[in-house]
Image 1 (cartoon, one colour):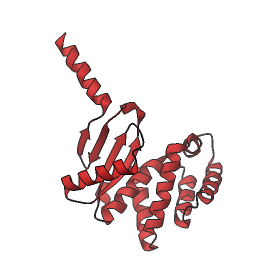
Image 2 (image 1 turned 45 degrees about the vertical axis):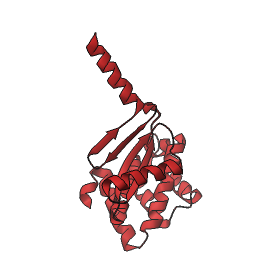
Image 3 (image 1 turned 45 degrees about the horizontal axis):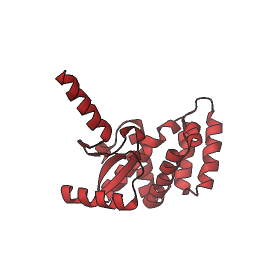
Length: 183
């Protein structure tokens, strides 16, 4: 399972996953990390808290403690965030969350599809995408959904090393390259 996560974020995610398994808290930690992921997407202040070099360890730890309480995160995740703050590794939090979600999905026998869309996908759209991917890969699929307005429209879906890019930006770039070749 360790091969599916890499780098610093992967190592931290693996350590957290192992601890969560020991304490039978995998689901509560995964729920807390999903809450953190949503907060990171929604709050510039939160992104600043985890990445600002102007905040010292104690300021980051105190900020994370307050946020963990306000978000009602489970105790193990709250403690883990304190360790990240102490080690000045909070900037790796988005990567750690993604890696933990991949580990949790694999433990359930699911594959993870990283999906990037220009706008937030509705629950119906996520369900339809899961159904399509399940039919294609003959396995349950967990979605790691991300929003990137720069792709303009369409989807970018990555499952393992396979990438399907149907984004409007890529299509327009391809048309632009084709037109340059015609002149």
